Every structure is written in C-alpha cells, then in structure tokens.
Length: 343
Image (cartoon, rainbow, N blue to C red; front, side):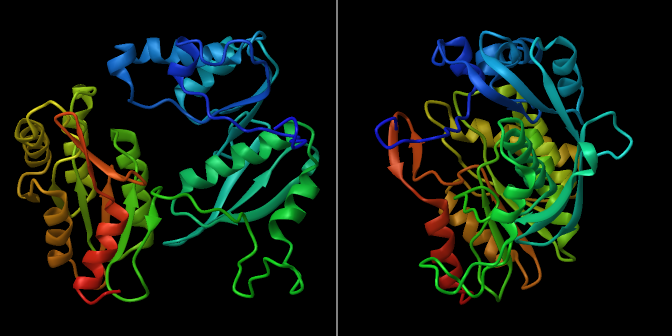
C-alpha cells in the first residue's frame, strides 16, 4: 500500500482483534461504533465483558478520535468512559448529538436519508440496501470521513453528482447516491417478478429484528423466514432467534446452518420449540436440508410475499462434522427461483 501511495485505509476491528492483540501498535486516526448486540458470548461470556473489549479501542493508545452512534445504552456508556475526543450521531431529533440522521424513504432495495450536523451542515443521499440500519452504517462512515479531514460538501458531490457520459464507468441507469454492493447483506437476488428474496448474513437476535422490521415496512405481503443456528457457537441466543422469527415473520422455515460437531436435530429442536412457544399457532416448518428448506419457502410464497434467508449470506460452504461442504445460498436460491419460473 505504501508503494501504491495509498492515502487512506479502512479496517473493521472486532472485539477479538483487540483482545487477541491483532491490532497492537496501530493508532487509528478515527474509530467508529454503531451498537453492541448479543453476539460472541462464546468468547466473552457476558455482554459486559464484550463491551469492555470493544471500548478499549476508544482509548488514546488505540485511536486519536472517535464517532459513536448514541441511540442505544452501550453507545451512551461508551461516550461516558471514552478517553479520546468524540463526535456523536443519533436518529432522534431530540437527542443530545452533534449529527442527526433522518431516514427519508425505505424501499425494497434502497434507503434514502438526510444527515444534519454542526454549523447547519447537511446533505441527503441514499444507499442501495434495505433498512434504516444500513443508513446508520453509511452515516457513521460519512461522519468518520469528516472527522478525518474530508469536506462534507466534497463527499456529497462525490456521492450524488451524476456521472459524465464520457466516463468509462458511465451507467445511464445509475441512481445518485452511495454506489456499493455488499454480497450477502440483505442482498436482493430475485427478479422483477415473483416473491422478493433476500439472502442475509445476520445470525443473531438483533440482526433478525433489524432486518425483519425493515422488511415489514416495505411489503404488504407475508414474510417467510428461512434460518438455522450455528453449531459449536454461543447457544444462549438460539431461543431468542426462534422467538423473534415467530413474532416478526408470518411463516418460519427452520433448517441446518453450520452444525459443525453438534447434533443438527438438537439445534433445530431448540429453534422450533422457541418459535412455537413464542407464537402458538404460527406456521413453522422444519426442513433439515437447506436446499430443500429454501424450496419449501418458495412453494409457500405468493408473488407479493418476501422470503428472508438469514444466516449464510456470502459464504460458500456448509460446515458439518469438520467438513466444509460447498454450498452458496445465493447461487442455490437463484437456481430455485429459476426452477420455479421466477428468474
């Protein structure tokens, strides 16, 4: 990167990267925090320990300044105990934050938002992804750029200016806004006809809530959710995952997802039991093979329904008893849609 004269580097830093000393010796110019959700407790045991691992990044020996979304309690706590200068973002106009994010419009494949900051600075743009949480992620990245020295007007110009038709990458159908493709993150893989299908990497209770609530806001049809739970990973989140799916989706299809060395039937049993107890009478199907599970969801779906296949995202394997079996949910879903005449 030095030889290529790279000016800026963006790096996602996990809690494990901090506690396992993978980023020791690096002092970041700007660090950002979205939220803390139920995940990685197989490594940290309790949320408090997970938070402490994350908060270490917001200390002078790790970073020069930070940007924090303060909508949740964890963000507010981080502001209190951070020892570096911070800038804050909130989605609430009444919040005590320097930047306010307003979601203007949500569509099945795009979220438009406005960001307002100090000195009456503001601009509107969009991200070609489902969900207000994607707008929050984008807003965090934009404010981090501002805090690192980039001009907000220059950022707005780069994001929203129509491309010149003489440019090599000119696309007459391009919608002004953030131009990004994130494989397997609420990725819409269906066509113009038939049910809308999203493949998503989310495999935690909070991820289920964010995505399902976002889908509910953009569809009048039913939500059919396909998912499983990781084997040999934090089992404490499985009951919540099953319950949330039943509460927020209309039809639940439970399948296998990386059982690893655990008994996949036992994992499915916890999810099925939690779903049925959360919403008695909810339509719940148990289909062990993920290929058959997705096709079962397609058999159930009408043209105006939405299918969310949560968990596998961009991954291209299915891990069973130490063996990584080739499997791409994105490719398989496209094949299934084609089989059903929707692609």
